Image (tube, rainbow, N blue to C red; front, side, top):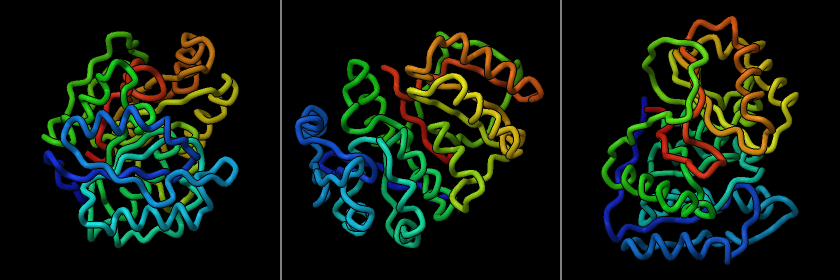
Length: 280
């Protein structure tokens, strides 16, 4: 059963959480000021600015902050501070019954993919693949305005592909699922990945060489998961070399698929990162 969190209203409290990589206070100031200027109250998790190497505090601390945010009934939405790495480390210890009892809007992308997909699989809670607080004003504020619109009105954005290419023609409809390619691949074979059957899958990536992308796409094929999708959409492959080479690789690797495949979805680590609900 899908659980749709209630929408935000003016004056509601938005919690800021770092379940993955560490973040500095000055990196969040522009985003916090923006949210407050719109009439929202913001509250930072108690250990938001902790650091344990490449993590925002140890696993126990990050887990404690996440649970505390969902238990706090005054917090109506949670915006992740950044991605990085570390969300996957806490999936096994999450209290998934808590999310069913007290659902709220969760927003993030990149490493937060692991959390969003796990929440959908284990609790049925719908979340939003969208900008983190550190990137909130990226893209001239367009991403932020779309995010606030979907959080407050539940109105889904109209998605266009102005720079898109059609790799496989066709028509498809289904529930949207997806996120960061490497995180999706690393969830295959675990109890935290939702079924791909009949889904519209989108993938995005950052800073991976072409052969690594090849390896991940091949893994999707060998797992048998990608063949179950209704359609595939490619978002930004930022800092992954020549975009045309990535497109050619996708065309070659997925030549056996019969579903529609398109590129140019404006999501991911590029300037455009429009919000998409995961599980709708």
